[in-house]
Image 1 (cartoon, rainbow, N blue to C red):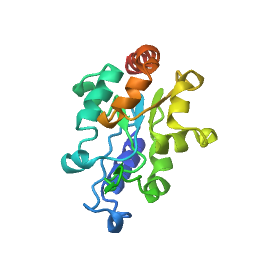
Image 2: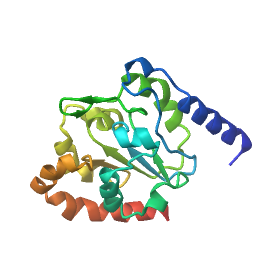
Image 3: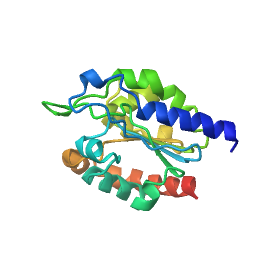
Length: 198
């Protein structure tokens, strides 16, 4: 990798970590939680960091992360290796909590940073698109479909993209009602993850 490329990536990472665009709207202030490196082969796109990620500065540092790592068939060392896995949510900061869980990611974040950051991830072979906000960005032609509908159609997007439900314990009922997810999708996902990271 060229020195020029490294300089661009380092500058972008610093700009993102120093970002305060949404701070007036964030209940706990700005604290962007991202993980990326130009060598990353797997891209994980979620909604926004939760409160535990905000407090620790570590993405998926909670039971959702444990489940996600199990779904992928990777351990923590692999998961937190930015040279292998990029974690770039739709919103980089914790948005606060509403009546039904965390609030949606702030729109300003994607507008300011998303295209610039994704342009640096040229080695990505597999993208996990988790939840409706990520799906709306990464699968723009499918905006009118529900998360469940898109996940059921995972064959259409694989092997490059896998639409996924959120791994939160709040989705235990969804997983119980959709046993095909663990039987059909997850084995194929694990296979593609191993191929991407090999």
